[in-house]
Amino acid sequence: MVLSLFIITGTSACGSVGTDQSSKKTTPRTHKTPKTKPETTDDGSSGSATEKQENEPTPNPVAPAPTPAPMEGTPSNQVAVTLVSVTDGDTIKVNQNGRIVTVRYLLFDSSEEHKPNTCVELFSKEAAERNEALLRSGNITLEFEEKNKVDKYGRELAYVFVNGQSVEGTLLKEGYGRVAYIYYPPYKYLSSFQADEAVAKSQNLRIWSVPGFVTSNGFNTGMCVNNSTSSATPPPPTTSNGSGATEYFANCTELRKKYPDGVPKGHPAYQAKMDRDQDGYACEKY
Image (cartoon, rainbow, N blue to C red; front, side, top):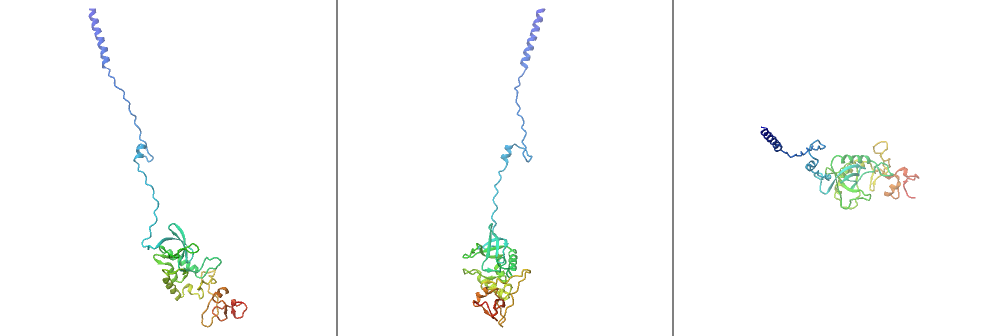
């Protein structure tokens, strides 16, 4: 009786131990990869820095500003420029392909406004004002002569056009200047300019309205603008020889260029102030 109980109890104890050991399953431990927080770019969008850098396009290099194309309709033998300033009736400064250049008008001469040691000559201010008005009315182009490109002062010599119209031709026709400095003919526009000048002379316009102001050597430097007004100061009265003709010279030096021995009283160029000894003969040589 005691033996049977031992057997039953022992069997139960062994079965219990075997069952616990075999029922325990060992599950391998796995390591979870931590989630990485997407990086935020400066503009607030997500994505890794590497990914963002790879996806961004490479900026194109900035090309330099192109040189302005010639104005439509500009003749092939002319150069387009822009006005910088007007010096006087026959000289200007322009921007030519990025360079500031002084330009002296070819075959044209106006009276002087800024010449050192001289007065403001007749019609010089009016010529400068008219010149500027023409230049600011449209597109400016220059045309050159092969033999006359630069003068002794380093200024470019050129024909000047506004919207295809000659500035020199307009100023000549309106009496603001004269044809001058014909050094190396032939010139392309010389005959045309001479015709324009003839129009002003026939109508006694501006520089041609004052007898003796325009001479074969240029303008009479003794004829000055009145400092208090912009109007021209008329020449002093001169004695005529009965024909009504008069000539005016500022001094004996100027008169002797034309009349080396002086002039007698009654001559169109005679002035009492030049007859210092009052002998009836002006600017005679002693």
